[in-house]
Amino acid sequence: MTDHVTTPGAAGHQKIDTSVPHSARIWNYWLGGKDNYPVDEEAGDAYTAVFPGIVTIARSSRAFLQRNITYLVAEAGIRQFLDVGTGLPTADNTHEVAQRIAPETRIVYVDNDPMVLAHARALLYSSPEGATAYVDADVLDPDRILAAAAETLDFSRPTALILSNILGHIGDYDQARSVVDRLMGALPSGSYLSVNDGSLGIDPVFEQAQEAYNASGAVPYNLRTAEQITSFFDGLELLEPGVVSVTQWRPDVSSPAPVVIAEHGGLARKP
Image (tube, rainbow, N blue to C red; front, top):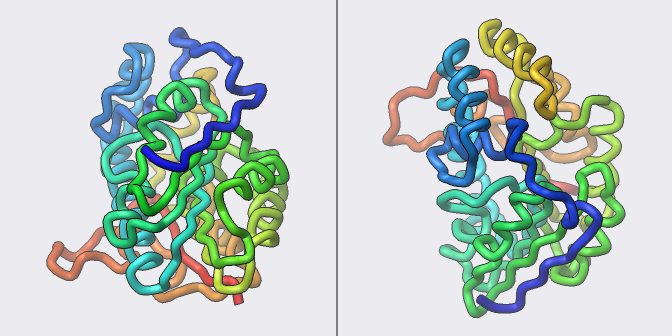
């Protein structure tokens, strides 16, 4: 472990509530992780009973992110990442994928979930040449995120902003766009934005399951149309193939032809 920082905030003083299912822990369960509680497994199983395809969405989302990071490091030369809404650690986290290719890469993770904070040490292991840090902050506070991340990242250099399945937790669409604009506005030319989120208009069974989940008392997650997700990239240069189902974003050529799922994403460069 080297050159690491944990920035505490108000969220860091919250207690882990094991009586209510939490989206980060349920997502971890669907990914095959162990950082969850019976209440999360019950909620996850109830969801998959209605829509078994959610496990495919979770794992395809993760694979999309890994392909994004690989491109950014190996082809675009990016050596700095700001990963907002990182969730619980699983296999092949952002720093692991990036530093496997370029050990000097620096990564800042951002989340405000107390369980994620409790597992921050698992995220903070870095190659000796690079750095990782954890910022305890809410996605709705981009100024705090930027100020804390600047302790590890040099915002005069191109940086990749990762927003993977986090913008759906912002109920107001205009507010979500404002957060993206504020964060990207602080990054220089040559930086990148990676976004993926659950999408509307593809699978009505998925939409039914999500509506039931949102009504359960858990933290809601808002599905959005592909057009709305595309709008997060306004003013940026979208890389081919644009905003598509995550399975169709530069898939492994040795894999079977990808099927469309209700999760869309893309990657764009700031001119």
